[in-house]
Length: 451
Image 1 (cartoon, one colour):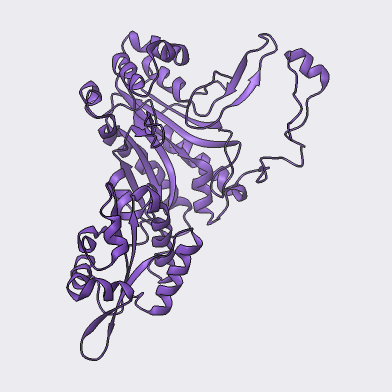
Image 2 (image 1 turned 90 degrees about the vertical axis):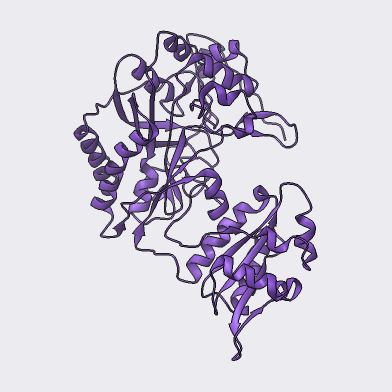
């Protein structure tokens, strides 16, 4: 808790040093789609109507930019009704929230990097803090790492090796590649070239719900290098050698293979990459490694319904502006970005869509009419009509940053009075049943829970 307090104080000092000022935005506000469920607060004075606790100060900080403040930050409490997990609180969290006017994506990066790098250097306990923060496209991050929050302490990069299996003797992969949108990916495993290790990783894949992972490992039989494993026998020495050369592997190394539609196996592939890096001692544990993930797609298509909806932040400016929105929605990228550190997302942000006509078109593609946009975001839309400066910003998750600095695996360890895994505060008995008098004041009735 002392570390947390010191980190927050350091963040404030560094932001003030950059001529930012801290402004507090409302806690009781209107519901706004930010990608999670709202916590709703019933109104006594307006029966049947509800406030919402803010998932983020998104609209308010954008309104500040429109009203003439060119820099803003806040140590902001945010509230989201989410399922708990080790790196996420189920109720509330704090973030270093910032916004700037007349900036590009790179301007935001150049502003926040020295703040966060300084915090990690100050409180990282002597661990190395990378000063080079590469920018990786969302598409490349998925291909190379199987996740949009890669751990770059691990040097392993996955690669597409589909061409080596197309029409090969390994019927499973060959048939997979006959279907549209499929590919075969390889996970290189330097020094992992033993049958024992390969069998262990195959068992890992089965625990994750896959039939297994194909593998090839290379060994020295005294008469030169030999490729071993079922895959090597099925596809033959020429294809096996081509794979080895593409991946840059040598004697004593291995490679693991997964196939299908990428979205179906990417998550497991990303986990396998992490496990391989840890078990083979390839991951540098004494380091903080950062990467900006950029070029996020704005839209996605529901494979069952065929409908297009927002995949990421709906307030992001599409790259190419209005012209981009006249083409295939699935090709539209946004000026949206995340910062990953050691396998965790610690910052998320975007250059905002500040042009009403582009905003209406962007929401129309996702099935939201102009009237609905005005109803949901009336304050912001009206403000934009008077002329809004180009603006953008980001928010850094304080709880997650402190968790990394404290070398903890669960975010509850760095939060005062944390909720349990069922989003309950057992000490304060929250959530609790309201009294009949409270319900009468709010004109509410609680329905009995159905079995």
